[in-house]
Image (cartoon, rainbow, N blue to C red; front, side, top):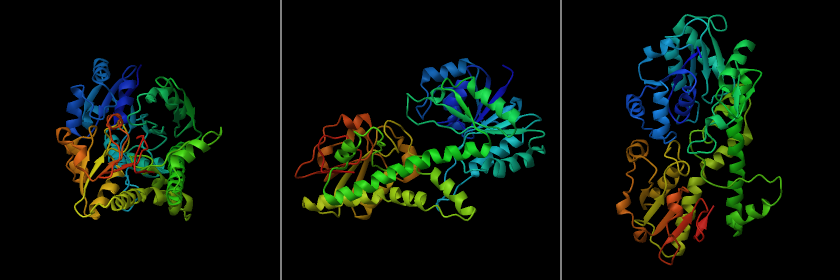
Length: 418
């Protein structure tokens, strides 16, 4: 096919997408991190989204991995898959998106199409990204170049719902471009596509997907707090309620990661910008953000009941990634549990076979425990924070000497759980 595709951002979203497009198109994968590019050229993906075999296939298909923006000049379609985080004040941080737009703007040509996949608030593509593209290219939007928006729906660590198996929402800045974008994705997405009537509709659809999940989890988290005070097993309640055909089966837990714990703030930012205070969404966010403190306080109470001296108590936290069987540590709320326990003057060790020790040290200032030093018997309390398969295989049971708190509810016996 004649289209040449440039994928900007080769993380959890961009890499699998680029590899899939490379089966049918000439693809250039761009990332600003040279170490990432070097690893990909050697068929190594630290995110574990693609295997060595899959990366070798992509390389044999002619995919080019580069950190040189000049290599993007040959492309006529650009797909942006960079992160869209929040800042310390929980406001959208669009810097990666703006920088990516600047990079594309410098190589943009007449009739090129720029497609954004990063989660944003409704209007961001046309209000923030397009002016940057125009400024750096000297071209005019919808006359010289065009845009599309097709929100990513990747679920990190999920080997079942991979990129081609997830229905794709598409959109474009003109009806003709919308059809072009839709056909482009339809050529690789076996699950099909849904053509939204506008870019803003597609942006809004994406941001409410994760906001909906956030609110549902906040609801069951609040139930867990209430049932804890009533002395009722939350999981038992949810199992009983779940026998009804239309009951939504969500479970309580820490809500982190780069999507569910972040995306609602993009929607609330836009709502507040237009003068509306989104009470329900922000209430759900506040509740979920406070679950780490709730867990820590429960652990401390259980330790006190067993006669433990809290100051200097040794606590082992199992897991630091934001979800099970995945190396992604971005916005992991396990850190809230750890920080709170440290505020109680506990000595906290963290063990996670999935996480990269250097990344954890850089992101959170924590030194992960080496596997050979793992001895469950020496701790006053063990907090099972992430449901890695490796942890399910561990023999952990509460005793008179040791508190076991199972956030994820995967153990047969524990002193406490959400």
